[in-house]
Image (cartoon, rainbow, N blue to C red; front, side):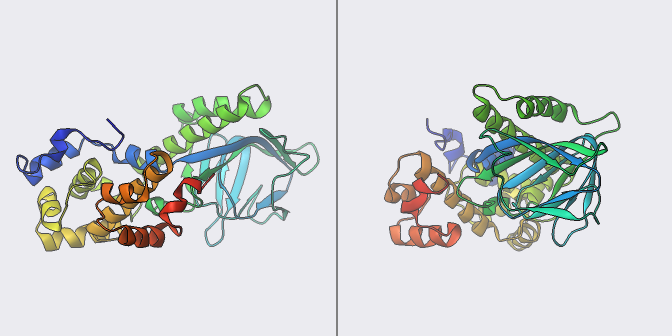
Length: 332
């Protein structure tokens, strides 16, 4: 059974009513499905220190995270108020936006366009800014990229900055565990360090998104839909059986709403009509099949419901910005 060959129960068209289908589909972990397809590649982890009143400016590029070990750290992005982090705090910058880190929002910063020798040795990075004996902050930072380029559109609902604050007793237990290994890898290189770092960053990002989605759901996008019970059932159903010939009436039945109310509620919550969302999800699956499944364009098009290669290619390129035939090479 392939990743997208779903159990026969999900394909039974005549024996299940919409509500019965929806009850089964609520067990589908939509977040895991999305993150399975939206692969990321951890690039490096580094140990950083700000000495005194100094700061660093990073140009736009890969996505970034910071975990504060000691002291305080101010993270600034264009258009939003700087966020002040304390020891045990984590911040994730999923969009790869240019940003600054400093001891405070008004501190002059040193421009860094790219990480290069003598700091970078291939698997580790030691970043030290400023001089003197007073350490304003010690932190662990890391870079990662999403396969295929910038943040995929299915994750466009994420804010530019995700802050996971420490709890009263300290950093959350999961963050303490992951950061322990990150710190170890940042401080001492060992055989297999590059792979270990990539896997650790992968785990950190997934756990951060899950924690954030549970505690502070966004006001828009499929993450917001999961927080609303009826819309969540519909999203789960579509993700459980993406190849089904869905229509608005069937989806509204799962939500136990009229067609008009459901369409309006889905669009206001998720940010787009239900069938448009389904189309984008199918194209995301198609891109993954082309990258990893060894399928031809015609086979991928048919798998996700397109009878015409031309129509599939137009929709695919409009969504991703490149042709289906180029999918295997994107992000490599």
